[in-house]
Amino acid sequence: MKIVTNSPEETKEFGYKLGTLLKGGDILCLSGDLGAGKTTLTQAIAEGMGIEDYITSPTFTIINEYEGKLPLYHFDVYRLEGPEAMDDLGYEEYFYSNGVCIIEWANLIEEILPEERINITIKRGNGENKREIIIDGVGKRHEEIIDNL
Image (cartoon, rainbow, N blue to C red; front, side, top):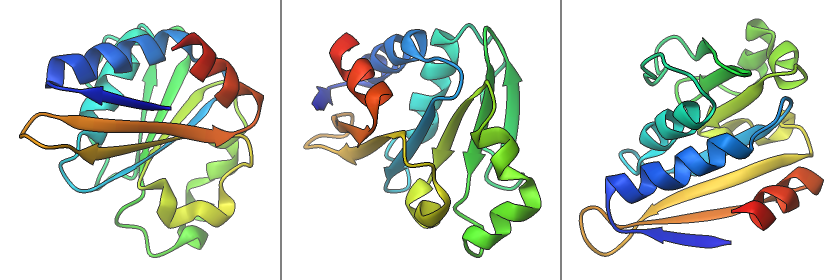
C-alpha cells in the first residue's frame, strides 16, 4: 500500500489513524532517510494511541517508553553497533509484550525482528513537504491494518 501526503499535517492525520488501529503486540518497523519524518509519524501514531506525552526521538537513549491505552516502546537503533547490542536492552521483553513497538531504522536489526510485523518506509517526494509512505509487512495484522486504512 502506498500513501502520498502533501504536508506534515496530512502525514500526521495518517499517523493518527494508524495509531487508533494498533493493538498490543504490534510491531512497526520504520525506515527512511534522515529527516524523512519517522519521528513526526511516531508522534502522530502515539497521539492516536491516546498518549499525551511529548514524543521525542530516542537517538541517544535508544528506547523511550510511554503510557496510553497501551504501552508504547519507541526505539531508535541508528547508533547501535549491530543487532547483538539489542540483547543488552532486553529487546525480547518489549517485542513480545502487550505493548506496541515502533522501531526507527529497523532495517539495521532485521535479523532479530519478529516475523509478524508492519513495515513502513517513508520517502521524500517531489516538493519539500511531500512524502510517500509505503506499508507492507508479514502476517495477519499487516493485512488487517491495510484493510482498515
